[in-house]
Amino acid sequence: MTEVPARAVIDASGTWNTPAPLGSNGLPVPGETEARAAGTITGALPDVTRGHFAGHRTLVIGSGHSAANMVLDLARLARTNPGTEVVWAIRAATPARAYGGGNADELPARGQLGTRLRTAVDSGAVQLLTSFHTRRIETTDTGVAVHATDGRAVEVDQVIPATGFRPDLGILSELRLDLDPALDAPKALGPLIDPDFHSCGTVPPHGARLLAHPEKDFYLAGMKSYGRAPTFLMATGYEQVRSIAAALAGDTAAADALELELPETGVCSTSLPADTADAAVSCCASSEPVPVTIGFATGPHHGQQGTSHTMTSTNHLVVRPMEHGDWSAVEAI
Ligand SMILES: Cc1cc2nc3c(=O)[nH]c(=O)nc-3n(C[C@H](O)[C@H](O)[C@H](O)COP(=O)(O)OP(=O)(O)OC[C@H]3O[C@@H](n4cnc5c(N)ncnc54)[C@H](O)[C@@H]3O)c2cc1C
Image 1 (cartoon, protein in one colour):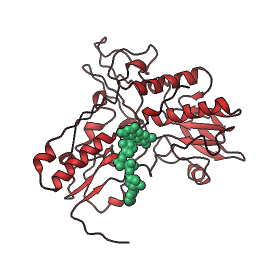
Image 2 (tube, helix red, strand yellow):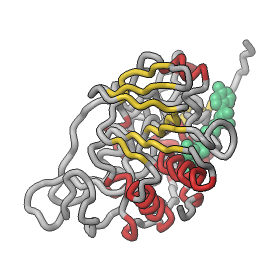
Image 3 (tube, protein in one colour):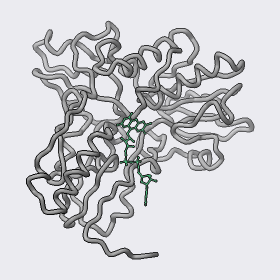
Image 4 (spheres, protein in one colour):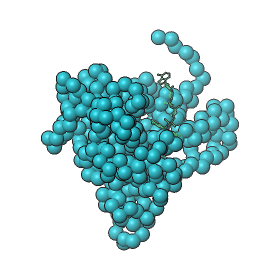
């Protein structure tokens, strides 16, 4: 090991190398580690035009943008490659949130992504399994059998796990960090990015001050600074590191002068499709506090697995914004 003395450290190592496991409890299910090692559980975003996808049966697990892109890529592949089958498993009882806000989306390409996903399912090109909680993976002669907690089992050639990412904090274990207990993001940043609670997906600009830890001159930046929250955008990171650099240079005024305008990452509209989210109703039409979830799910509550609570409000929408996905990569199916 080589030790490098440094005046300051910025950990911008991302989360790509630590995908979330398949278990609904946040742990790998029995058989998962072996299947990942054998390649029958692939990486999070494989190129389906290469490898073992054409002419085979693939299960995509997850309901964010990554899962949507994978499902659509496979459906596209199936059009020209007989025998290609696409199965899509989500934990929710309905895919309404994954279908998104359609024309109401602030980002048109993202709205189209959900619309095309709906079309793919409705047309029969994709077999959708709802309320599917993975319990174990069984390796078979031809691939894997994925067993759900309710007894269902799906036999496929391979699984694409699109269940998100989490930060690897192991390399920081000797540092004094102050992290949000649910999100693993810097504590002051957590409430601003919690996918359950920050309205309409807007994230206030933030920099060195919010990203600081008790460990002097140490910062988490970029994707990793969001911990388990799946809403990070590159523009946010550019502003973070600009502010951090200014703070390290002693220019407090520049570090605090935050300038960033982000697009909303949720769909802040009350014009919902008729069969949208589980309990979706207009925020303004009811006098009762109601949760409104529109657009792509961000994954589990607070970025954690398992069950948790849903906040309600009489005055504003509670929107679960997007998971990571390349919105520009949407194509007609
Ligand atoms: C599928 C997907 C689509 C996305 N689409 C968008 C989009 O359209 N727009 C957008 O703004 N954001 C998007 N994002 C979010 C995107 O990941 C981030 O905005 C951006 O890539 C984060 O940059 P980063 O530098 O923080 O992390 P990364 O891009 O992950 O970079 C981290 C780097 O650190 C390196 N590293 C890791 N560990 C170590 C170590 N121990 N030592 C040294 N180096 C290490 C890695 O190899 C990597 O090069 C998307 C994310 C995903 C997963």
